[in-house]
Length: 381
Ligand SMILES: Cc1ncc(COP(=O)(O)O)c(C=O)c1O
Image (cartoon, rainbow, N blue to C red; front, side, top):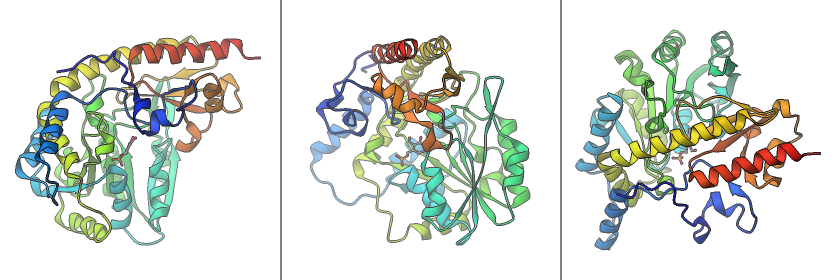
């Protein structure tokens, strides 16, 4: 198995968002959330075998795929998922939008806390719902829920709580106590929870396991739509294979109804890759997590040494959420882009003054990007 994460594949060779944005410029792309690593060899081999077959007819999920996924979730996260709880989707963002559409009616509220992965902010309006939000807060180097503000923001027409766990962009893997608080609030206000757990395979802190909120207890499971995919963990996002886990039959049928005539089958290659990833991708994932821990340390040390920049240690994901406000830059993302580093602008996540740095890349690329950032801050006029 190829476990050499130091090798930088030339991504300018193929069309792609991350490297394509800066195709003719000397800007290292550390923005959109995919990694610069080739997919695990069992995934590549499964894809090659399937392509060699040569026939690509319509295909529904098959038994060995379903058991690879349910066994993988039980092995990695201790949650036994029944096969009939699964609803296959071509993407997690599709699932976020379907959840908005399936729960409540026009004008009803959908809660999420900011900063947040931008499609959370658009999904309510896409589906005639109303975004209701409040801010997460950073205290002593860690992001937390503002419980009072959350309870106050959720009005009587709010029907859905959109959770991102592990959290993009702040990198928190929420603990049992925090999740139990969310579950109790959902119970008290009769909210459906839609929990985007796409980053669940990327928990970096060994003592902080991912806890699916639906695994807390049966009552919570019954009001929850969990969204997962192999795409982030095994770096296959453009294969577009994801799934919702919906234990409650009535909620599941509302969700399926919202899909009718709009949401296509999942691409067969995505499903082939998913089976191989969940079944045989464990050793690659372990090696990846080790490598990402090393990259995280590099980021934390480098950012701590940059005047005016602060960050918190991401417990999960390959994303660092960097506070640039004390550096008093007019536009931090544009400033670092001019210095040769492409980052995501915090504005899109609902929090200006921040940037998000993707450290899912070879260490040499990361070191060069951090050196460029540091030089730019040291030499600015
Ligand atoms: C929290 C979160 N959800 C969903 C997605 C994208 O999911 P998909 O490409 O399956 O729609 C991302 C990608 O960055 C993400 O970070």
